[in-house]
Amino acid sequence: MTRSRNSVTIRDVAKKAGVSVATVSRYLNHTGPVSHAVSERLKTVMTELNYVPHAAARNLATHKSFTVGLLLSDIGGDFFAPLLRGIEDTLAEHGYDLLISSTRRPQRWRGKQLPVGPHNTDGILGFADSLDETHLHQLAERHFPVVLIHRTPPADLLVPSVTVENKAAARAITSHLIEVHHRRRILFLQGPPEQEDSYWRETGYRQALSDHGLTLDPALVRRGDFEQQVAYEAILQAHREGVVFDAVFTGDDEAAVGTLAALQKLHLAVPEEISVVGFDDQRMAPYLTPPLTTVRAPTELVGHYAAQRLLELIQGGAVEELLTLLPTEIIIRRSCGCSPS
Image (tube, rainbow, N blue to C red; front, side, top):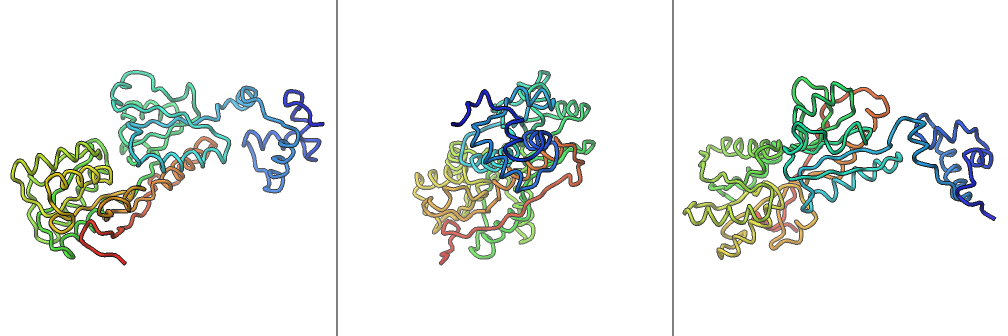
């Protein structure tokens, strides 16, 4: 008969698996190498014995919480699902839990203790603008592991970051509108002003206009905030002001949803009258009407690499690569005017 979980000890596991107690401890606490064969044998034995390590005892023994904190400025929209999946799957493989704190007003943490940090986690993942420079410097002074997502650190801090290539992709998709579809009045919807993704996408847009000898009209640059409703209102407002445009680069796919709804309300046909392109290639992009031409960003991979970099720091590794810049690609669908096969 299988013994109850409470009566099974680490020594029972070691004896049945034919390994030392130290090997079982290394496996449970991730404090040293254990071969794949031994790892699989230990998993089987622990299942057979119904053994579950006591988390509190493990934490006391290792002085670790085996928890990673994630700070987000928002958690709404389709963008965050693959990012979280990449983070959670990677952490789970190494026995770590994820503690998430989200607020649309990260400034409320200024001058206060962060909701996640040295007091309850072994390291922090900070998304975009969720960590201000003051907190970053404080964490660096304590040598506390931090990895930034979709944001680069201040020049004086050696903090790793993981993001995607924004500028070249934005330049390329804007050039596609100009060269292939002969658009000349391309309206650009900015993201939140504090987010680097928005800055680099706008930079790519501006460079594409310059490349083709087009003068930037300030009336064609509007706030979309990477949000459906904000983008919807921005398009309607531009139309009320009499701004003429023949294409919209929506900044991201969430804003594309609002843009398409606004153009439908205005009885402007996409792509016949107005071309629309986005960024991210979120899961709803192929199912919009018309299907959205956009830039595919490897969002799940961003989460994976960010978690991997943080685990390396937690386990005592050095910062070998400050910036991990993942490639993006243009995905052609019908909203720009193309008819992909």
